[in-house]
Length: 403
Image (cartoon, rainbow, N blue to C red; front, side):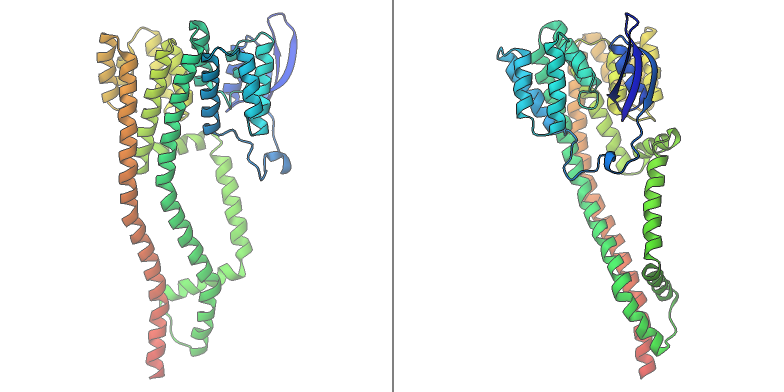
């Protein structure tokens, strides 16, 4: 989302501008981190179809592109190349104009004396809080190249995880989409021809056949109403899921729905543990780590739990004890953290837990595919069988009439 803002700096000067962020709260936080006092902030509405981002060529910077950028920046800085020179080189290599433009703005800010993290904070869609937090720690410790390499590994793990899940989900989506298309083609082109035959012979039709013929006739006569209804439903759901209640419902549904909910929860835990390990290794305070994790998980249903954990930790409760109170986390995480807090190996435990949940996601994804296949076979068989029976029964009756 794009937001316009009016702010005051420490000297009382008023500035106007725009900022990209996930929501208004994230935009406000990014401006406040820069030491600015917000007078007004509001979302920029894009009503024009052409200005809504519709393009044959995608402008979105992909996760893979960010991984490559981070790895190359780490390699260049570790080799002794000046930061501005490294950024200029990466700007030239960037393929997408949007990314090239953003790297150029970061380069301009850094060459003007701004810290790399501060320059990146202005572009939260490309460089989220996890990214900038790690960069801050690298700047403070003087180990920028090292933390960038760790960050690239973190994003690579996320990319691998997303790729595995997409490959598992794509198969049932393709099969179901193909089935729907075949059914629509039959209802529009095949069934109407059979209806003419049945009407001419005057054969009494079973209830399933009448429903099938009625659906076909309605689709042929009022296809535009079906189309308008589908488009209307799409935009209605899109609007609803942007509201607070809609977002809460969808986020809760994702983690509670049978079969897929288990996979989503494990993905969240893998991401949370790996992010926590990365940030602990970077030396960030626990409150910053919790705030970053809340943004990384990005689930409204989980948000109150993170807020309660943050409050408990701030009041002196250990992280393991605070997490144990929240039922959204598997008991294994606070149990292992409790041991790690005593031994001082919190970073290692987080990475071990992340590896464990990565394997769990992989196993769940594999079993999900094998579980979905028989379900799809039953659904497809039932649908095709019902359609065939609805057509064959009157034909059989027709044969009896002819005899």
